[in-house]
Length: 111
Image 1: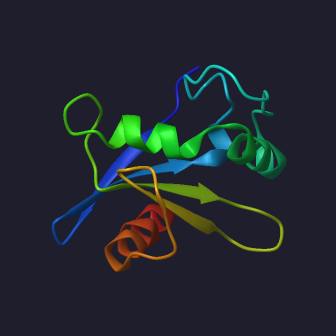
Image 2 (image 1 turned 120 degrees about the horizontal axis):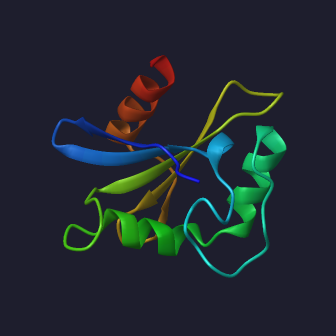
Image 3 (image 1 turned 30 degrees about the vertical axis):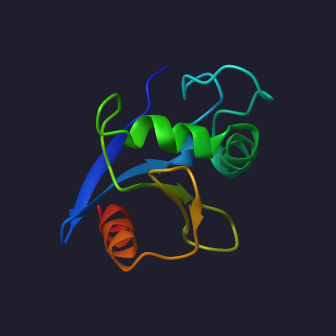
């Protein structure tokens, strides 16, 4: 299974955006961890918890071995909110907010 990862740029910062509705532990290409459901909000929630997102962010955001980006934005949807954003910096650390990341996230939602 393949997943779509979009790359956005905002004022010199670039971010990878991944909609978790399409992700399972197998489709992310990550071994180990609990298997996640593949569809819907519950699948996104399970995938979000089961995978090592800091390690994935480090790998995918690497400018030498990955796609290269300043961060990874995870898009989740649920019954109580339209969308939720979780941001990982390229070093795998979690960030509470990024203005340019929020711009990219909003554009991804608009598409």
